[in-house]
Length: 126
Image 1 (cartoon, rainbow, N blue to C red):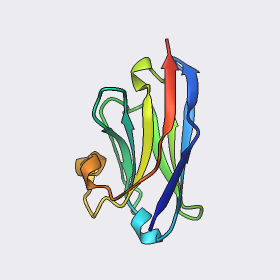
Image 2: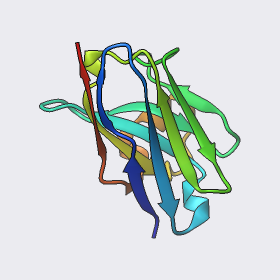
Image 3: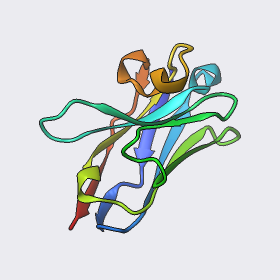
Image 4: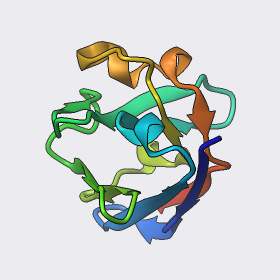
């Protein structure tokens, strides 16, 4: 069983930066494909970024050029560096693991992921 614990959320003004972390424990193979998702009040959960076992990354169009996903395999930790934050980035951010072998744009679709963290809140004020 994989356990995921997010941290690093908070409140920031527009244009600021935050770095989210997701510490994974459990069966390591399940963490090879990992992703970040977010959900704002009243909206569906949406994919933000994902990283595969070979280091290939996929981003939602809304965050390309501003967010960077990375993974430290030795620490089993996933990161999301968020720069140039906008008020519309405000949401609960979730880490997820094990995308069941899908890749590319499929890897930022929440339906594929097996394991989920509890989330960390990001609030961006204008």
